[in-house]
Image (cartoon, rainbow, N blue to C red; front, side, top):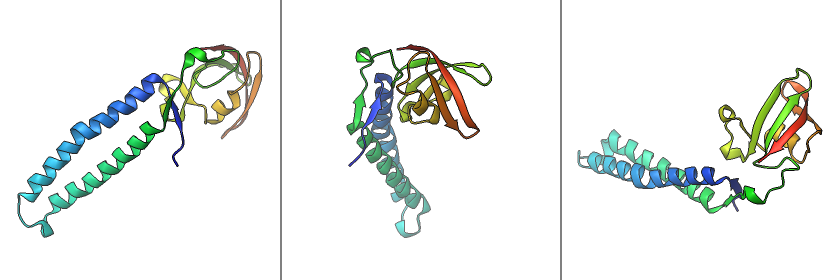
Amino acid sequence: MSQLAYYTAEGLKKLKDELHHLKMVERPHITQQIAEARDKGDLSENAEYDAAKEAQGLLEAKIAKMETLVANARLIDDSQMDSSKVFILSKVKIKNLANKAILEYTLVAENEANLALKKISVDSPIGKGLLGKRVGDVAEVQIPAGKVQFEILEITR
């Protein structure tokens, strides 16, 4: 059985849009490539046909995987969430107690993490360390470089 995955409305829409693109654009394109390769004659020695069939198999596997993701997706309703503690979709302002750097992140599901957008996964070491903490708490986080302490300065939605 597949694991449930939690998405924001934006993340779920992006996933569904990508699935739609694969089905409605990529699938017909590969079908056309197969037909064109088949029209070139003997299939036993047709590298274009073999490549197109392999691409079709890979695409169908990706579509099946994405359909499973969509079927097991659950939408996160952030309007019902408590902002007194750090949870998924919390925007947190934290201070690294070692170097006094102030950082801001939004905690998101693994599949929506994007460091460039300051979105970190709740499954990342920092995300796990921050979960359940309140403003003023210090989270001790084990990262590859060692242990780091972060003070929670602010939690918003």
